[in-house]
Structures are given as structure tokens and as C-alpha cells.
Image (cartoon, rainbow, N blue to C red; front, side):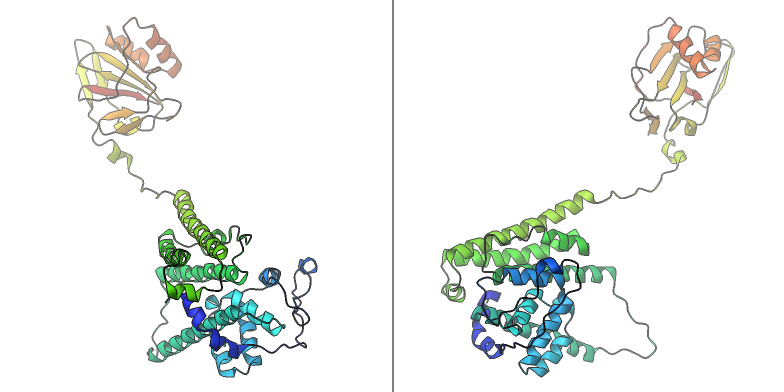
Length: 401
């Protein structure tokens, strides 16, 4: 049965663990600058509280899972559960539900816990005992040869372990919410998101957490419908309003989990591409390596296409059509680039094509300095066309700046 049903079945066992009020328990004095504003440790010897919110907030402010574990062990020692306390001491801190630790400490401080709180306390203790016994059993079975190197955890194992720890902490948020009576004013703010970010949980591990909370939500939805007698009996201590608030709380957890995945996907850096050699980029560019025409008194040798890639301005002559192509990089790309057999990144307004009537004289002027060449090209009386960037075997690269 679901975990809340299991809690209800533990009520009779939990009563045997009720702590006798101890008035001589010393107050905890946290070493924190904010301690003066939060007051002293809660004491329930003289008066029982209506709500445990302030007490939970006090312990959560100054203590962590390490102290929660110590509180739980102290609780068991005071109830003469020595063997159980020894086992709990060996439990990993990551498996300790801090809210249960706070409850154990409150009980030592005189809190008279309700049956539901006692049941949750007993259930968590049994869970920890099972974890420790399973770990001891696995350790006994493990044989390590003398002289062999210690096997380190892989990255995948470490990240899965972190995800498991985060899941336990998020589960503790819900336990804390349960301990406060499913109040609609209970505020977790960004606890779920912060927990995931601090542990740097991988996005691919989050769907497992979402699936678990969706199962819990489905159980509460079924309880709300009232169609299951077992659930109705197990959750009889909850009002309809508390059930509705619990569903909203679970929805907020699921929303935070999905939101974390979205944030990680957006913030993920793109994969760095391996730099491609320029020679490979321009390998497919068709061009004329050399051109000689005695009639036109032309003897031209082309530049390497490597010079053309990433330049800002280029002069290319079509030897067959006697057309001069002038390419100028646009303000966005800031450089020309070769892709396949095409030149890209040129400004169509600044670039142009003109037919040369006297190629020998005009090419000499156009291959001079930049300002002079531009001025001369504009003064050529010919219809100017817009280049498309496509190359062929008749085009020779004269200049590239």
C-alpha cells in the first residue's frame, strides 16, 4: 500500500516509542549571529503548541541532517532502544529525514506527539534500520582481494547518488508540510529548485523524480474522490481541505521539477565544434588558377582560395565574360566566407559586377590600393549588376584584403 497507508498501520507500534518528558534537557545554543532574533530552543514542558511551524523553522534555520541524526539517536537512547540507536548511528546522513529528527528532538523537549506523528517517526526509524542492515549484508558479501586497488565511483554513479539525495530532501519538504497539518499558507518558496541546483542534478535524472511524485498525486486524487475504503481509513485524520491543499503542494513540486529541466536545457552551453582547416573549407571552390591572353595583354595568376576565406574585401575577374566582381563584407558577418562553391557574407549594396572594356589597363588600376580601386570601380561607365557569389572555372582571384 502507499506510504501514508503504511503510516496508519504503524500507529500501535509508534505508541511504544513515546518519550517521557525530560525537563532537565539542556537548551541548544546555536552559534549563529541570527540566534538572537529567533529566540531560544522551543520547550514544550509547560505548554503544548497549537502549531509546530515555528519549531520546525527554528531547527531548520540552525541545524542540518547531521544534527537531525544525532537528535534521532538521542531520542532512542532515552527510550532504552540501545540496539536500534546503534544501527541508526551507522545510517548515512543523506537518508535522514530532517523533519523526523526535529520531531524526535521536540519529543525529548516535552512535546506530546499525536498518533500520526508517532507513526511517521516509527516508520522512518524502521526504514533506516532496513537500510543499515542491507548495507551491512552487502558489505559482508563483498570480497576484496589483498593488494587490489580501491574502485572509485564513476561519474554516472556519483550523479545518480546526488539525484537520490535530492529526492530524499524533497521528500523531507513534504514530510515537513505534513507535520504542519497541510496548511495552505505553508511556503516552500524555491526550496526544490535550490536543492536541485546546489547538487547540480542532471536533467535526465529528474523525470524519475517527477514520476514518483505523480504516483503520490494520483493516490491523493483517488482519496479526494473517496472511492477507496482503504485510503479513506488510512487518511481519516485529514479533512477535505487538507487533501486539496496536499494536491496543490504536490503540483507545485512537480512544476518546480519540470521547471528545473527547462532551465538546465536553456542554460546548457552548445557543444564546441572542432575547428575545420581552411584548406578543407575551400576545397570545393571552382576557380581559374592562371590566365594568359596575348591579344588582351593579360597574364594573371590567381591567389589561393585560402586568402578569400575570412577576408573583408575581394576582387575576382571572370576571364570568359570579362566581368569584374567586387565583394565587400556586410556589417553583420564582418568577413567573407566560403561554403562549397559559393562566397557568402557580402553586402549586396556595396558589392557589384561591371564589364571591363580594357581589362589590361583597368585590372591594373583595380588591384592597387583599396580607396583608389573603389573610386576607380565606381567611375567605370557600365551597367552594375548584383553578384550572387557563385564561382566557376573561369573566375580568377586577383585581390583579397
